[in-house]
Structures are given as structure tokens and as C-alpha cells.
Length: 115
Image (cartoon, rainbow, N blue to C red; front, side, top):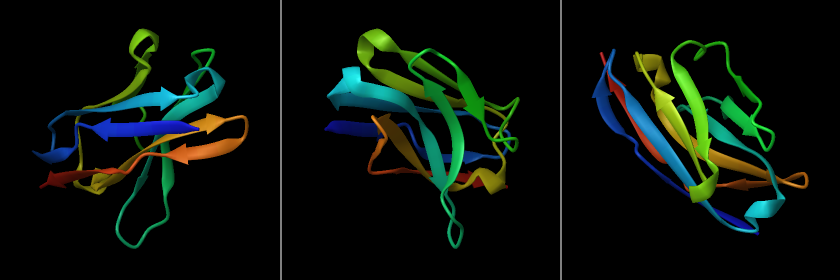
């Protein structure tokens, strides 16, 4: 089992920045990958960015060049630095962990971008 606790959401104006954090606890040594998904009202949950145990990263085309995923292994924490935020980035952002093919999710944190 893995527990994920997110923080860092909020309300910012377009063009602003936010940093999301996700702290993992539990069976952290079994985590293959961690990342962030988001879900806007009326839309499906979509991948934002992911980082593997080996440090490889991938992100959605819509956030490339604006969002950066990173991790602090000592703190078992993954970060999502979001710059140049746009109103279309408004969503609930969920932390995600893959443990031997099983998905774990955080409770979600709201990110709202005003125009």
C-alpha cells in the first residue's frame, strides 16, 4: 500500500506559477513511477507528467515547456512546477503512483487559473 498526500493547489492569475507537492508513504520502495493527472469539470482525467524510478520523465504536449516534474528521493516527494499557467489548466490535480501495476491516487488538489 502507498499513501499519497498532495499540497500546493490554489487560485492564481493567468501567467502565474504554482508548485504542487506529493509526499508518498508506505511501500515506497515498490513504486515504479509517480506523476500527476488532472481532471477538469466534464472532462476525463488526463496525464500531466510522470517520472519513473529511473528518473525518466514524460509530459503531455499541452504542458511541455511550462510544467516540470521532479522528485526528492530523500523526502519521497514528487513536485510539479507549473509556470505560465493558463485558464485551461484549471482542474483538480491528482498525484499518482504505480506499484507493480497497481495504481494509487491522492485525494486531489484544486488548481484554478483566472483570466
